[in-house]
Length: 208
Image: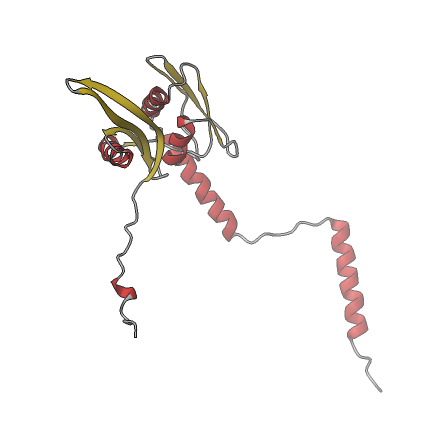
């Protein structure tokens, strides 16, 4: 007979604070006295989809160990991205070595117009609408770094935050106010006449 308390002894899975995306895993070699030393280099992006995002680079003799090192380093350089109405507050264009990235705010419903590392970083940061263009080299490592630098260039704009709160307040007020259907004067007279006719038909006649 099985133990009834067996289910309670199962270990509870920890909920991860950040989601992880592996950008690239490379094989790198280093020449030492005894020959060549083979290792793996992992580039990882993490974020909570609520404005916090970061990236890290880790090296190890195994891929999984390199990814863990990259995640650990990424948590130490976390930044907060200002997001208003699902998009960024201003345009930013940054160049890093041969890589260059341009990001622009977009209207609601546009989506993430980007590809490669830029798309993953924007998605993990929680940005829903943005326009971007990679203008330089397409090296994934450099594109990741330059996108991170572009997000650091974004400005905090309190006026947009106040406008966003004002829109939410107006929307809540509109939901609380009952909706009144507007009709023309002609339709109102026709409905009133139909109501009076129905009332007369339903009223019983008095007997003498």
